[in-house]
Length: 83
Image 1 (cartoon, rainbow, N blue to C red):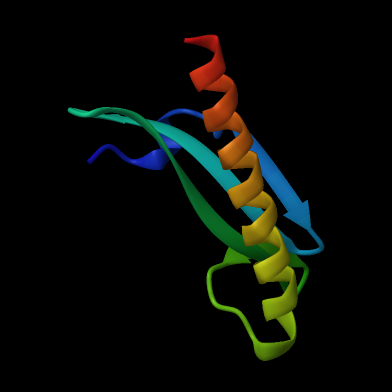
Image 2: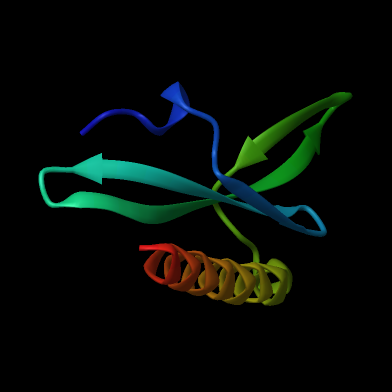
């Protein structure tokens, strides 16, 4: 499987420090969407990205996942209508 970083995401959703990146990928069966999540945090004076969430960050992660799911659903429907 190719790495996700070769092409930019087709869409990003930001909710506080939590970000969803939606990717369009291609397999033998055709194109599909996938999503990755990251959270920004500051270590000393440098901003970094992590993939672990503390309990108080889960609401933002859930909200971002719901928004990503809805965007992916709309994107899939708009592609089906165009075909």
